[in-house]
Image 1 (tube, rainbow, N blue to C red):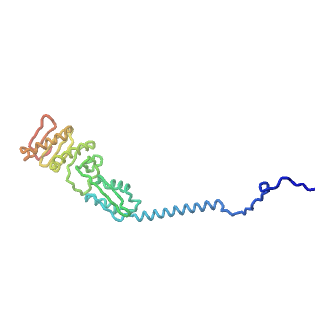
Image 2 (tube, helix red, strand yellow):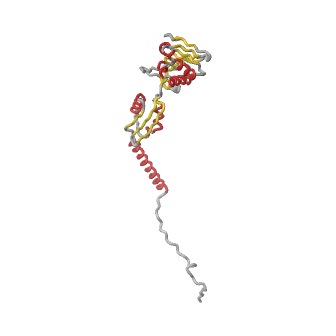
Image 3 (cartoon, rainbow, N blue to C red):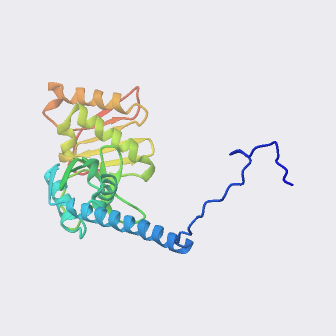
Length: 260
């Protein structure tokens, strides 16, 4: 005897057969890591080679220097002595810092790269105002208009400048004195042979025995007054020794050849 269920089999309650999945061979993990490493290494090598080639393509082959002749010559000598002039070794910032150190005659400097292979340099030279002997090194040094002692006098170098006899702490005041002379009477500055720091002021020794004693406190005012006196026709034809250290009373005497 057969029994028939009242429930019909439909698609929902029928037993489903699982699809047969064929196994696929996949690369092992170490092989994947190796492939990734090779790809990264290749990219780094290609990038490095490109940068190396570009660096050498930008090697400096010419330069344009705008500077005073003696500074221009020193910059050219420096560039000619460099063994590497590729882009990496001629970056503007590093080249500018090195030039300021190696060429102390430069006061202001601007370095620019003109791509692909040019170099533009603009330099302003220091103005030497006096010679100063360092008590520590016993070298004769050059001092500029700002009171900065920037280098030693080279052997065989002949510069006609006044000699400054003062301590290192008095260099700024000495440069002020020289600047005042340069401003109001450049002829006196050219005739100045010595600038000596005394306890109560400055002693200025000029050519032909002329000599000034100036108080430190009223430096510019007194120098202007002395210049005005000496430009007066009454005094202009002779050379004088002027002591202006006492504000209420100045002493003026004819100059003699010997210097005190």
